[in-house]
Amino acid sequence: MKFSVIVDALPHLLGAAVTTIWISLLGVMLGQVIGVLVCVARQSGRRALDVAGGVYVSFFRGVPLLIQLLLIYYMLPLIGIDVPPLVAAIGALSLASGAYVSEIYRGSLNAVPHGQSEAALALGFSAPTIWKRILLPQAFRISVPALVNELILLLKASSLISVVGVAELTRTSQTISASNFRPLEIYLAAGVIYLAINSALALFGALVERRLAQG
Amino acid sequence: MDTNLLVQYGPALLRGFGVTILCWAAGCAIGMALGFVIMLLRQIEVKPLRWLLRAYIEVIRGTPFLIQLFLLYSGGPAIGLRLEATTAGILGLGIYGSAYFAEIFRAGFQAVPKGQVEAAHSLGMPYGGILRRVILPAMLVSTVPALVNMMAILTKETVVLSIITVPELMYEMQTMAAETFASFETILGMALFYWLLVEAVSRLGRRVEARVTRFLSHPSNARA
Image 1: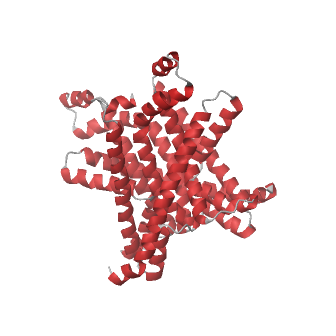
Image 2: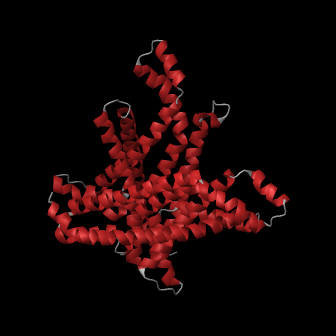
Image 3: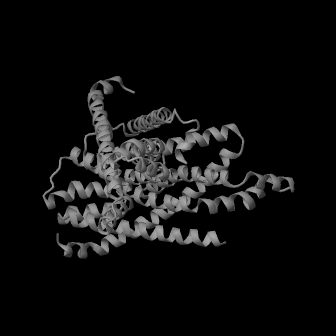
């Protein structure tokens, strides 16, 4: 063990960690949008939408992320869209996250007492208003712990996008340890950085949860 | 799809699938055994030991599986731990799983009604007997859904082993894709195959769940 190796590599690793963070955040945000849309589609009562949403969720939760990533990476050029690996990676993370998020929302929506939307309906609220004012705000609050958990899972899963050559934390660790032949030190440092980010996220999640519980 | 390709690559794919199953089964077994021991050790009231086990679980759950694999496989030799890819893969899966299994077992352990343990104790049962005849059967029933879920997750994680060159199914399929230039078709086939595999594991798990909870009037009792 030589700590000087870690000190030398630290600026590069931290820079790469920033890439990991923003890619994961972007993935989770796009995943939120997809997740909400899929969830609403599945609750809409239209059979075709429900089935399509169900297949989407089953596929992206059942197929390993690494395969989804390669699938998107190889599929897009085939239909004439030539995208950089970064876009394919963010796309794969968002689609995977969307499937999990839609299930989180479904569970949270079920936890909102049914009588509330009935009462709103009886008061003459339109369906979009019921969604916007009654269901989604409460479902969001219920889903916060699960969403923070999802962000942590996605941050860990983002290590897989190193495979298509995106220079995030894992890829950068690989590159550095391939050039200085010190994989033990470099991967230990990378592990500590991941752990630090995830602990910070968990702490942040606990704070938000406490805050919302007061609200 | 060209049938010649299947003749040419069929044996390699089958062998790869065998390695996948081997890694998964051995990884699950090691993970559960280790997780169970960790759960038992966590019951001991010695502060440093508790901190150590807590740290172990937090570190494993807070870092990506891929980094753990790299540490074991590439970083290992620096401290004299030279492992073959498949061995490193199995061990990595086991260690990764152990942290999650330990938490599942802990929840199951806590869910056993205290009164039952106290009753057994007052009847003069030794602790080993209480563990084997009172705690374990109740735990088995209440933890099965979570265990099955974790095993399905580990099925998906086996593909990550291909990155450290474990010759499992994903690795063989990528070799095939590279050699035949039929990347998209191969990867699509792979996606469908794993979809079915994970679905099969989950279904099998639900049947096991139904079987071990069959004597309960309401299966939900098990989780109470």
